[in-house]
Length: 445
Ligand SMILES: NC(=O)C1=CN([C@@H]2O[C@H](COP(=O)(O)OP(=O)(O)OC[C@H]3O[C@@H](n4cnc5c(N)ncnc54)[C@H](OP(=O)(O)O)[C@@H]3O)[C@@H](O)[C@H]2O)C=CC1
Ligand SMILES: O=C(O)CCC(=O)C(=O)O
View 1: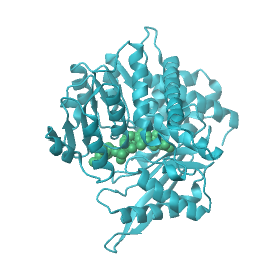
View 2: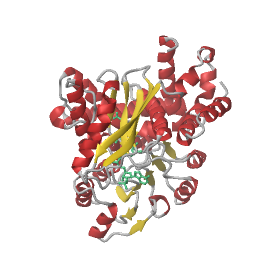
View 3: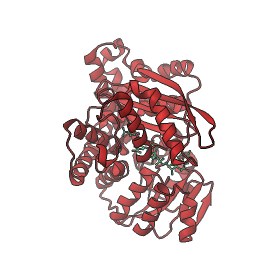
View 4: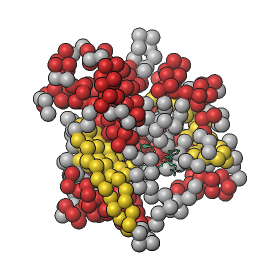
């Protein structure tokens, strides 16, 4: 294959899907040489079958708000690839959601899930519905209406959704409840469920903790200690807060959090007491990070992202895609950042990635660094199918091992002749080879 030709063709066929094209470009330009070592891949036109999702469900979701008005949103589920296991990936509820964003996420998920060492294919779903400012009852009615449309397409061995932006324990609970009622079964069709009905310990923490474990593996290759390091985090949702919690426990200083309205800077580092406040603010009161800044009289920068306003050694973007651009990367490098480990999916733009790789810092792409979340989802599926529940220590130790395995795969496929590890290439090639071999073994489908 010629990556440029494949891309040109995809751009022609999907002209209004920039995020999807961006994700595909990053992967196929890094796997091109490896792919071309296997002429059978080309004979089976593997690349096109791997880039284009198996199928897309799109549907209207009609629901009634608290004023009795009928509201309509769009819903989607992208089943990208199930060569190595049931379709698996989160559901995103955010006003920005469209088919391009979900296609990029489902594509990324396929490679990420392949890296986890577990048997999971890739999928993603969501809606342009925003839970922000909605009452619990409105969120519940929306979730129920969403699942009434989707339930036939998902199942414990078919397609297993979970959370993502705007979808946490509350939303998963409402969706799972409606799924259970429609399908008349009580299986592991969702992950991230409540503890009382099949959820795994450590799943809420897993993406953030996993990212820190991956970071520790990277730092170890250069003999660097995390204690005392200043870490800039974006976002203040699930991934950001559990990343911060784990970092605090290791003696690092978390110097920023943010949301879509602005950034709070914490010059002396976030304390556990402040962290607990943020958890309550975000998960119970569903408030804004500005309120945290006000409560503790910390500098707040409306409309700004952390990268050009904080002084840090490590950056962990944990909010959303394309939230860190080339200028941000140059600013981070100028102040001597040593590592960037992505909690979000595709948070760095191609320009930013180029800068990080050229500077030869430790740079971990989301599909490797944030794979802990879906990994513990895989462990939740395993517990559900055995009708067992593992202890937090057991799940956490498996998570640590999986993150170490992913790091090892990145080194194996990404180490260059001078010893530098290109984690982008390593993750893409390792993820690709497993899916490719499974697809080849199963014939043209
Ligand atoms: N949850 C998981 O297990 C996993 C999540 N991820 C990825 O991590 C990222 C964060 O997800 P998660 O923490 O679960 O989601 P949450 O909804 O819990 O939190 C998202 C955070 O990011 C902020 N944010 C969202 N959109 C934007 C935007 N357009 N600009 C600026 N800030 C924004 C939100 O602010 P606001 O409240 O203002 O919207 C919020 O602080 C996403 O990229 C997701 O795909 C990756 C792997 C697993
Ligand atoms: O746990 C899951 O299934 C999905 C997590 C997720 O959405 C992601 O890895 O981006």
